[in-house]
Each structure stands twice: as structure tokens, then as C-alpha cells.
Image 1 (tube, rainbow, N blue to C red):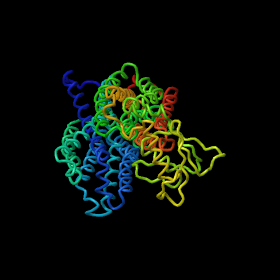
Image 2 (cartoon, rainbow, N blue to C red; image 1 turned 90 degrees about the vertical axis):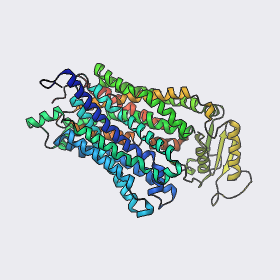
Image 3 (spheres, rainbow, N blue to C red; image 1 turned 120 degrees about the horizontal axis):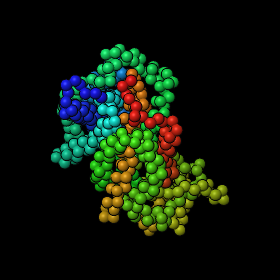
Image 4 (cartoon, helix red, strand yellow; image 1 turned 135 degrees about the vertical axis):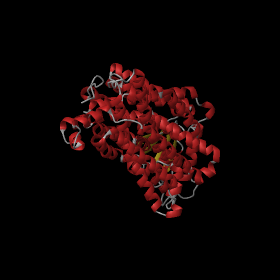
Length: 557
């Protein structure tokens, strides 16, 4: 970027800071809106899905949350095209307004009790609009900042955009926690939950005002003045192999790995602490918040470093380290956060010996589904609810096919298949007797019902979480600059937005659900890590051989 005639270096620096501040503030606001729904999913379920049973309602609420991830690539297509046709600035003003209006309307939306089925329908529509808006926001902000950045500083400048997702999460957490503490849980569940959504209108006004002070991107303005803007960005970006191949390479050689590392470090780690290691929610939130606070400056550090040594080696190194260290890191996390569970696993591992034909696929994301059709289902459901990891082993043909053997250390407990459901009984081999026997054996082996707060090695937990966040900053800090540099300016907004949002919306957004399903299917609390590990390895291989280095490229063409 060249200085305007008559502009002083001070003027230029002030303009650069204004571009970064306005773009980053707007993106923080949009992430605040996006995360707010997830933080309040339980309350939203009660308010808008009360026409069905509690379990189904919560599943619907989670599905509505997931819908925001699912439509992000479509938002990238819609708003990416507009951004390449009419300009960067005006497009991300539209996405911000759409996101802000949708969020505010959630705060005034009547509940199911007031308008019936129209309430959840309208909620899902607003959630879809939020996802579409976010799909257009990131590409616009990243492109706008990069096209304002001086040569040799694009990694540094765009790295500020990369901090916004974490800062948005902090903002949402801070507002929710503050309002809850001020008005109390009962009032918050009744009407106070609407306040964080309503407050967003103030943030929207401030963000829009700041962004309206900005000028159009100099790169786009130059294309517009010369009449070289694309007339059909979608066709040009995805209908021509010369461009489409870079979209595919960007997705699998950079973004997919970045996405799974990002979601593992910031979301799956929290889920693992709470749901698997049975650390209480407040403690888990505080520990991961400390790690995020310590790690956030490294987004900027690795963005700056990518201007010196390149984007590719930092991103691929982060993916490679994740693939190599996730299993030992999460095993260390178990030992530090719930040492009683780690010791019991080592001392008395649990094995479920059964005929696989009598075992259901136990995917139970909210812990309320019932698996009671066979002895295998009963045993695995009991262990899952108790938070006890286990190994599945196929039963020998010499044994009865409708029986299950639960081996806890040196003790074996037999369970016979229930006939006509689980009924009362106290005889050996019956369901109630066997489950009681399992409980005694697990207690004797030292398996804890929940993590002992006094036994948690909090400094070590924070150190492990910080390491996971550090990997996030390695892959995420330079990714915006790489994507901007990878595509020509005529189709940049469109072309970079699609792989980013497919990677982060689909590969990353559905990681917790997919990983949990893998854990539920096997009983191995670490088995879900294979998902990010495999994707990270694919990214390293494809990126190593096909992804070009871009940090010395000019983006003015």
C-alpha cells in the first residue's frame, strides 16, 4: 500500500490502525452474536421448544445451533460474490447489519408459550440468517484488512482479525456471567436471558458507525476505476479449473487442518474436561479462559512471524504437532484434571466382552437416551453415564451369545439379556443385581464419580490447555493472509470465503459431535482424537506437496 500524496507517516499509521480496529471490532461483534446462542442453548430450548419433551427440545436447540455452521459456506458464496461485484466495505456493512438485526430479534422473539410453533420456526430462520451473515463477514474483513496492509505486513495486520473469534467468545461469556450474577439464575432463566441479545443493538450501532468511516479497499477501488472487476465471480472462481484447483488445495492443504486444530483446542478440550473428566463447569470454564487469555497474543506473534518466514511452514508445523501430540497431551490432561480416573484406568481397566450383534451404537449427546434392549446396551450405557472408559472385546463362540461379561481389573461380572425389558429382581445375573455389583466393583477399583476439585493440578491443566491454544494460534494466525494471497483480487472475496467456511463450518464446526460419537461407539475416551489427527495429517501431506508459499506475493492483481 502506498501513501497518499501529502500524507505523513503518522497519518498513514493512524489510517492503518483505524482499518484494523474497525474491521476487528466488527468481527468481534459478529462472533459475540454467534456464540451467544450456543452459551444459552439450554434456556433457549426451554423457551422455544417447550412443545416437545425436554430431550427432543434440547436436540432441536442444538440442531438450530448447528444450522448456523451448516449455512456458512452458502453465506460465503452469496456475500463473496457481492463483495467481488460491488466492493468489500459495503458488503461487510450488510453482513454486520444482518447479523446484528437477527441477534436483536432473538431478544424480542415471543416464546413457544406465546405464539406456538411459529416461535421455533422464526428462531431457526434467524439462526440461518446469522450463519449466512458470518459466512460473508470473515472473508470481507480479512480481504479488506489485507488489501490495506503495507507489503511485508499482511500477516501481522490480518492476525488481529484472527483474535476476534476468541475475543467474541470472551465478550459473550462476560456479558452472560455478569447479567446472571446481577439478577440471579431464576430471573435470568425467565427473562434475563434476553438482555445479552438486546444489548447487541448498542454494539451494532457502534460497530456500524466506525466501519462507515472507512474508505473502500484501495485494491478494489483500483479495479473499479480501471473497469477490471469480475462480472461473474462464482463462475470465474469455481467454474474454471485454474482457480477451482486452488480452492480445493486451500481447503484440504490448509483450512481443514486449521479448523480441526482450532476447534479441538478451544471447544473439544472444554468438552473433554466437563463431560469426560467430570470437572465441574465453572472450574473448566475458568481454566480454559486463562489458557485462552495467555494464548491470544500468539495469534499476532505468528501472524508477524509469517511475514518473515512464510505462512506455509507455520500452519503445517501446527498441524503436524497436533497430529503427533494430541494423544499424549489429552492423556496428560486426564492425569492432571482427574488423577483418580487415570489411576483407576491403569490399575483396573474395564473390558466389555459381548457379541457385537447385541450392541447398539450409543450416541447420546445429552445423556438422556435409554439403551436397555440388551445386556450389552445396558452395560455400556451404565459405564458411559458413570464416565468410565472401557474396551470392547468380541465374545468367544463358546460362551452364550446373549450374555455380557464386564471385566473390572481381576473381577468379572456377568449380565444376562433382559427379557421384556428391565424388571425388578435381586437374583444373581439379573440386571439390577449385576449393575449394583458393577457399581461396587468400580468403587473398589477407585473410579471416581467426578473429578476431585482438591486433586486437580490446575497449573498443569492450564499449561496443557495453553499448549493446545498455542497450536491454534500457529494454524490460525497466518491463515487469513495466506488465503488472501492465494487468489487474484478479481475473485478474492468469493474464492477465499468458500474454503474457509467449508473448513471451519463443516470440518471444524461438527468436530465435537463427530468426536463424541466416536468415543461413544468405542468406549475409549481418546478415540475421538483420531478425527482431528487424521484431518491434520491429510492437511500436512497435501499442503506440503501442493500448497504454494504466498507471503512474498503482490495482491494488487
